[in-house]
Amino acid sequence: MAAVLTAGCPARKRLEAIAASLHPAHELALFPDLPAALAAAGEGPVIVPVTAPARALAAALATGQPPRQALEAWKGQAEALLAAWRPARRRVVLMDAAELARGNAASLAVLEARLGLQIPRPEPAEDAGDGQPRPGLMLLLAMAVLRSDPAAEALLGRLEAVLHGPRPDPVLDLPAFEAIWADLAAAARAPAGSPADSAAALRRECGLLRESLAQTLAEAEELDAARTDAERQVALLREAVAQKHLLETLNDALEQRLAASERQRQRRESVLGAMLLRDARRGEAGAPGDAGNEPGA
Image: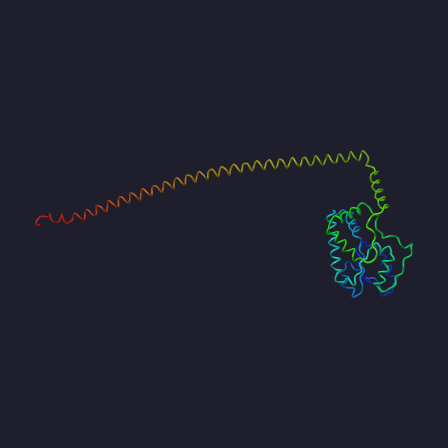
């Protein structure tokens, strides 16, 4: 007989007792998760005690997990379980762990049908409950959280639809609410502590406040020094920018003067070249006349 048992599963003792009462060939093989059981259990059935969703979520909340984180963790676990169950649903028997732990007759009848064996019924004295703590505020909160998320509520319905055997009514009864009320009343009556303890706590709080104030003042001084340094850097940058603009203006003026000087030089060279050309032409034109006036011509 193969079973998937998580840590603290209330059905562990019941399954161990069932296995001990059967023929030695049907010893109990335990696995941490369903894929491991399916891989190692051959073709035989695999029993998976499932903790009621509200109880599982309440246990997670009791450890200090925030409701959203606990709900997302439960949804991931439930999705993984259903995904592993679906292709092997002919072999896998999902049962409510609390009802199996109680030795519920209908739950044991389901096991007998799936195992093909007769399981001894527990004596009334053996039924010591499921070993779970009595319902409390965490269970109420868990039930509200499950109903507040549409995806979780749909997943809850899918899981309940494939569980074999009876399932307990998730609604708390009057004795459970009376137990919750008793817990709250006891907490309200708890002593608040002696005046000396209160004074010591106030002194510690004052010391912490002084340290926090000193640290805040030190950080303010550092920020002020950093601000002063930043202002000085900004002033230097502004001065550098102004000098840059001045240099650019001077450079533009010099470039304009150089361009004007270049234009004047070009004009002078042009005039000089024209004068030289004119003089050269005059010299060429006067040369024959000069030759005819020579003596003896």
